[in-house]
Length: 456
Image (cartoon, rainbow, N blue to C red; front, side, top):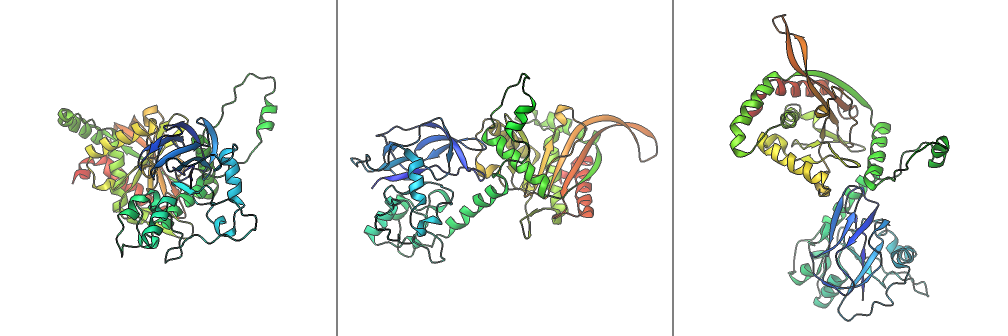
């Protein structure tokens, strides 16, 4: 029985994507882990892997097709010699998806699950003429649906295995052929699939939905009739950025705290370190020090190391710091995990790697999801100060401006010239109150003005 390969949800906010390129053709034999296609999500172009072995019997969605909804069948896979001619009509995935939506109620609740691998057998979703309700999807002991490929289900049935006792190794805990072939009686129950699918759905509802409201395209175009202009089509990333930032400004009660930070001690210390690290090919940037300073400040003010979670706050123990990276058509915020534990040189190397792969569109979803705090640095563009928008569910974001020489009054009351960097902390008032935010920004300032402390 042929199996549908469904359009996967390759990022937490993905609702549709572009099938950029097929890496296989009809008749090719594939194994688990083989690359099937390149798919453009709302954030990047990512490779899609096979989770089962078989023969690609029919490609339902041509490469280059845009707006392919998650869970839409894009191809059929089956056994060698299997007849694929009657498995799907010439209408391809859209027609099949429509038929699936008319299936029995037991299947309806599964239609909204983000597809992380292959779908049901191609004939499973066809409504029967006698309208007999389909049996409910298999459930685990905790009431959650068991995610398994059709091939894995057939093998498990032949071997008399209970799928609820098998831990899946496929995407989001999906049970695949290798799992049932190596399964032993009494294997630990897999409870990961349900939890794993909740995060993408929650993230999608948080920012990947409808575009911001305002004048329609027709209304705007009418305003500029007779003028010379070019229409720029929105890609998936720009749509997501627009939706998430509109949501952030509409739903997050921002307030702003500002401090000037003197950088002379840091610049001198950085110069000394870079000379000593030159032989290792390491060159620390001011931003590396800012990341470290923020990570340590979150440890010093742990109540500020928190995110908003709808009806509660979640306080993190590690300092997972996100850093905004500008890319063509939008931006990424890759996350540096456990930043408080890493050396400046380690943070520098990791940040360079993440930023490079962000610009190449090669980041994985787990590398830009999470964190409790973010940094946006426009100092390299000559911007002296600005207010950044909080990226939900973060509790705060630090806007970093350029270091500029200014006259300041020293501790002894004398006027001197110092390199001063303006910073603005945008704070979610639901998570961090004014005094707590002030403590956090003071800790960041203390770390940057006394950089050697960060090495202690």
